[in-house]
Amino acid sequence: MSIHIVALGNEGDAFHQDNRPSGLIRTYLGRSPLVSGDESSLLLNATSTVARPVFTEYQASAFGNVKLVVHDCPVWDIFDSDWYTSRNLIGSADIIVIKYNVNDKFSFHEVKDNYIPVIKRALNSVPVIIAAVGTRQNGNFLLLNLAGTTVPAHRAILVARCEVMAAMFNGNYMEAKSVLIPVYGVSKETFLSFLEYLYTDSCCPAGIFQAMCLLICAEMYQVSRLQHICELFIITQLQSMPSRELASMNLDIVDLLKKAKFHHSDCLSTWLLHFIATNYLIFSQKPEFQDLSVEERSFVEKHRWPSNMYLKQLAEYRKYIHSRKCRCLVM
Image (tube, rainbow, N blue to C red; front, side, top):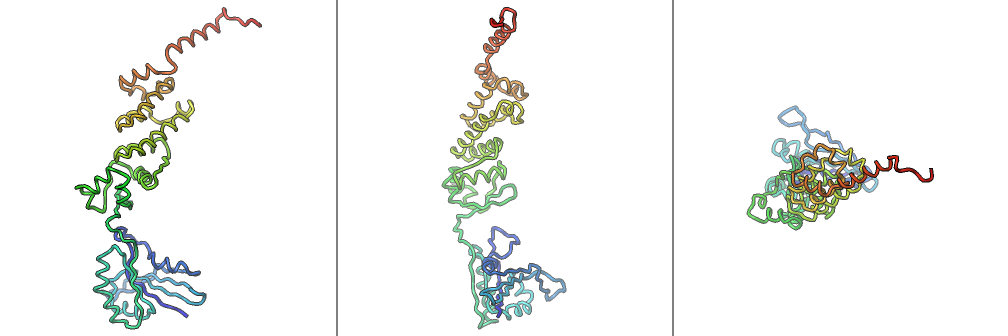
């Protein structure tokens, strides 16, 4: 026993116009123990001998001995350009499934007004199933354009978690009426980490550089808690480094200090000044040490460790130890 199903229409979201296979058909057939798909099935155009892809054929088994043959045809223009082929296609069907995306109003009206009447006139005894696929968006869904890549997001979450975005989407700005929102001044990787924080209230930077980029993004969108998390991460990472690693690392601490000051990270900038001062012998040998401002240099020299007094006393002590006046009483 076999059942022939013809699936017509494209349930793909209008926001994602790509060539992804039918999710509806694959979802239902995926429950069967045997599924095979022929992605290269072709039909000949009535006006040309050139073959073009019109449908995908799936074969599956259900209930042990029931064979399912599904022809999935996502393009409706087959009815306009090749009525003979389309009539044969639906004429052999036991069940017809018409599918469209619930958010694609144009496709819904086109199917309702043009194609369903045609199919009903051609077939009176074959059951027709109309499937609306997807989740209705109700204006809450948007796309963020990051360097040419679109990332989906929920307007309500962004508004609730970020005051700057709340002003953007609720005020008299272009973004309030747009679905595709361009994002400038931040890399894709950094903004994805920023979105992860907005959704999960947690972040795990891969290193000091990424944490600094995320801190800048947090300052840009006025998310103070994320900014403090990044500050703490940078401080913890630097504190855990041994002196040898500090001396050999390529990270520019002075540049980090200037970025922290520029982006109003007072906690981090103050700590970095103390960090440079307490590791004076390491950082004073680096070329970027000369980039400190006069005020910063004065602070570092005042709070440096080891201090000039300590080094002077240490030199005197070592000189005394190695002099002839100092002898071991035992020897």
